[in-house]
Amino acid sequence: MTETDRGPWIVGETSDETSSKQTGRERVRAALRHRILSGDLSPNDRIDLDAVAEEFGTSRTPVREACLALAQEGLVRVAQRSGITVIGVSPETIVENFALMAALSGVASQWAAGRITHQQLLRVRELHREIRVAAASGDDIATLNWLFHREINKSCGSTRLQGMLGDAGRMIPQRYFELFPERVPCSLDEHDALIGALARGDGAEARRITEQHFAGASQMLSTYIAQATRNGTPLK
Image (cartoon, rainbow, N blue to C red; front, top):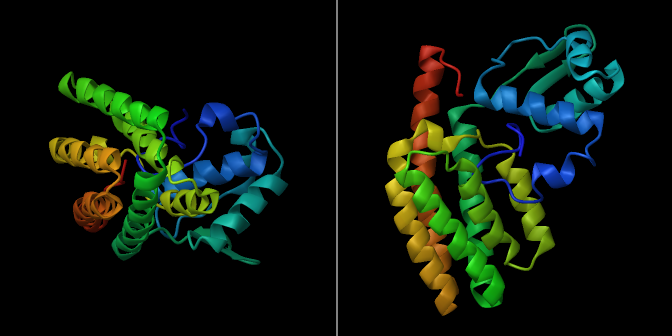
């Protein structure tokens, strides 16, 4: 899984499954989106089409197409004379995106409680055990956590909902647990409760737990971004 694809909330195929299918435009779009959301590209920074094209070994056309797509996401501004300028993302936007993710993920968990197969539930339990082991040893858990949520979201049985989750997840800064390691114990307890609700087929409880899971994440991340913005610190 690549750095730009790795994160706790995005739903879909792993990058190993999609890397061979990605076009140059998609690769550039994903990389620039990550740099903007992480703060590596700040508001009012200019994007040099030639420099990006050289970096990715492509022509200017897919880079420009990627920037036009990012403009539709509200992350850059494309003007004929001034070129491409980064707009960035505000703490308010992060809160909005988490609210969307909470609502969509809550519905996905509710549907999954009634549709998850025995094999899928076993996979969710296995991933949760791996997360606990990794957290206890101080290893990276972001990818495992990403897979845990992805498995539950896939179990909802709705490709449309999965697509909506993927679109919302791409607008959330990645590597969340590297920023907030203190959030891990609470998240693991919530995972335990969520697995129990899925096993019982309790959709209402699965939805409540999932929304609560995101509520805590939203508050911590929005506070961090607000502080980083005031201090001029990139969100890594």
